[in-house]
Length: 190
Image 1 (cartoon, one colour):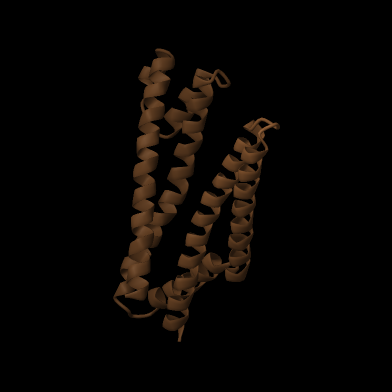
Image 2 (cartoon, rainbow, N blue to C red):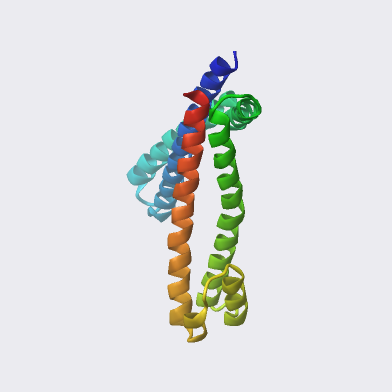
């Protein structure tokens, strides 16, 4: 029974994700159409009419996507809840998948700590580059991560270099998290 519930919830969660992507795209189109309408000279009624029609169509599409999102509801949260229940069940049983799921869970927990910490330090570095933060505070945060901050003390160029390293590492960690989540799903649904 839970396998069928998981598959159904997975389909709904995927639909929700697709709708969220579509929502973001339509919102961007609505904003662009509003900017274009604002930029048109008032005396050019033909262009105003075309722009208003375009904006109306995008607004209607946005309303439709928002209705669909409401219809799907909290699909992602339900799916995650069902995955968590199944994960607990498998981990507590004699199922050989339990050990792999426990290891995946451990790695995800580590990522849940490391990734936000690196993102905070990256944000502090960007603040320094924009003139809103101090190099000393950034160095302290970099060192708290266990990174060497020698180049940072040399100035803004060093800060930029460390921010790039943090960017790269954050992207790696996000890819790792996505891979672990996909493997978890595969183990639970496979």
